[in-house]
Image 1 (cartoon, rainbow, N blue to C red):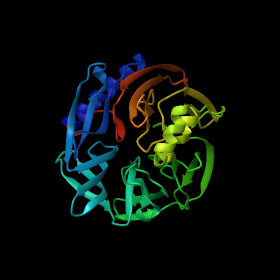
Image 2 (image 1 turned 45 degrees about the horizontal axis):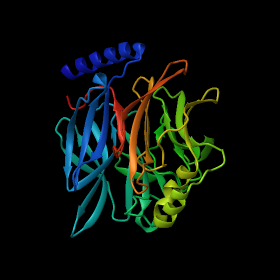
Image 3 (image 1 turned 90 degrees about the vertical axis):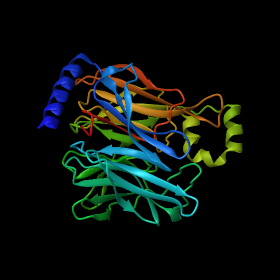
Length: 348
């Protein structure tokens, strides 16, 4: 009863703050700390720009990434990588109960890497991407290739492969009716994936799709079509660090855009012309619980071309899709390994 009362108060507060265009709720994100330690943190956006945050979970001798909260906020799923000298690296998807703070291993296999989980709207299934180790996974640069979409049924405890097409390593986005997922194919075309038969319908050019909670607006990143401009630093970089170019070549040569697409009319609006973006697996686009703010996180290269610099922003979007000014939340030099925007503080 107490939890219900708190969530009700949070919901009323969110409604009032949304009308005034103020930030609200909590940004949950994972972040690397010192060697062999990762943290799951909560930032209270209601008090922004005051940095009011705390550590919800600290993982020692492990890396935790890609958090996604269950619809009831009682559980969270994360990717866990445990590294030991004897066994090397193990990858799994774990579910943590936020009342008992106990963690249970959900999906683990020696032959593949599960990543970018997304809870279904009813909390009964989890969409995820899986990369076989045999595909040439690059441990040094965290390169995920041959990413296929799977669905894990929590009640049946069954893992089902949905697609054979390769997808960009970003979190899939569920439709409200739980019949489709929005994901970006490796050729950077956003597709609607039918979960019943795996059929694909092309929506628009872009990547990193994020569907609003009401199912009406799709946010995504895309690259401009203007001619590329190359400078001498980029040429040297491609010679010295050829492995990294699989991620960053287009980001070097082209500038990104963030757009929103109204699905009923197919109208597209530019949200941001030059957001930080290297098309990394840690880039994020997240709708606020009330669909009135958009959080986006990405990377740029600073003066040191061997170092990525992370930035995070939010931008207000009215019900009429009018765009407000951007507000910087993090950056520069801030590393996020996945994030989620939630209504109330979980684990109360």
